[in-house]
Image (cartoon, rainbow, N blue to C red; front, top):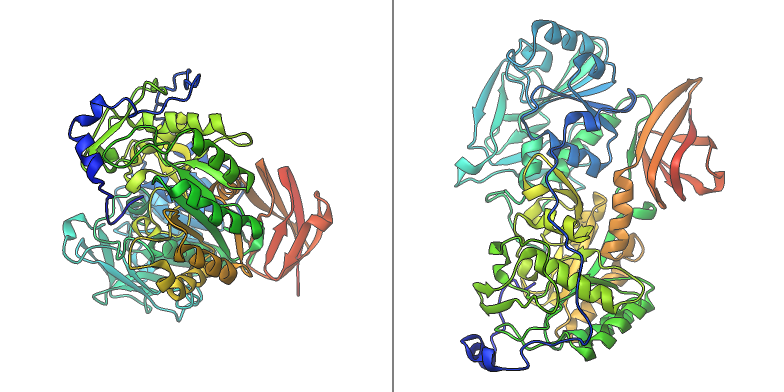
Length: 619
């Protein structure tokens, strides 16, 4: 990654101008090494359908879809990220059997029939909790506690009030003031609705003071009306489609999406019956902390060793995104050569994750053709001509060939993580990563993504098809805002802020030199050690991908006892369950010593397949 500057070497500029073709040393050939020999065609998009997520008992949050043509899949991604057990259904009768229901993407008299509107009203009267997104009609204004509605794309900010149980922790977590749109480019903003003539003080207001989110008690139940399409906002962050919402490129706290997910989580957890959400940090810690390094300069490989030695001393693994530069061009000399192999293997011996940082490290990767999945070394020879142009490169070639070389020269691991040079991240990247055998991407900043939590990538960064690849966004990097060591205190504060929401904190440093960046690494590791899980992109990614498949349902056994039914298709260790009250563990299908309860959290040991935990409320 190079955010601010390109290194321009005079001799290489001459070579790039045309002299390189006459140079016999412009490509490094590893004798007898060729591959990958098996083609990897780009996977096809398979659209997700609501029925894929229509399972689980009535303890889950039911998401009732009024329109399939909506951002429901991004809402699903967000709910899975925050760990709320849910089901998606187009069957209103099934949805209303749940204690908590979210109607999405809008409520009108056009997408709901009179009988359905009556059933919804009766559901709330009898004690149900209902979250309505964009309540535009249907004769339910009184139930939600307002008289009129005002639609606009001009609103760009949201302020959460903290005098409510659902938002009481928002100020401490830094969630009270959010930017949700642009003040200048309103055409790009998500559509919003404000509720007028509200019965109760709103939970949140827009920057102009109008009600954005309201609550109301109706009969024995409770309603919430959201004036923002949360799925649309999630899609803007996850799919890199936000316009002027990001306030900083990196190095700052911007939990825009996280705030909405935490609000939904708090509403879901407010029920008096037991409720459980999945923890977001391994081993019940407060923060996931990941050190990562971009190795993309001729001296970077050797200089990486002191960083890895410190990490080895601390018994933590970090991720080294290594450019497999075997072509001499505008950017730099060749450094993926025979000497480099020994350094890469030493990094591996020190416990590092070896990851790909592409072949060419081109800022023009945004514009690369995707390729056909037949690119092989040494025939694949991308050539960076200047900052804006690269010849002979494809996305699949960058992914396939770099992975092949790193896999070939390392012994104990397969490359599964990727970061492009300059974070040049084209829309075809998710499907290209999945096709090439990658599982994890760290290719966008948290501030650009509007979230400090990982998320699953979609095909083409669009709205209808998932890929199996997860994005683990970058938090702090070394090229903006001056030397890292001068930003140490701010970086410590940022770590504590992100820990408040159980987020992930990825540090990106280049190993161009052994300088104050190593001092920064030592200082920030010492700072977060008491409260953070620390590991590599792959270690965290493996845990997160397994967590993504965990399901939990709650069965009432009577007499104050409840059973948690857990299913983990992929084994996972160190998963925590967040509870909505004080409970004691009275039994488990797992060894009891592996089930530890601490206040309102349960920390599980190894979890695999179907398991149960029995709880009893503390009176």
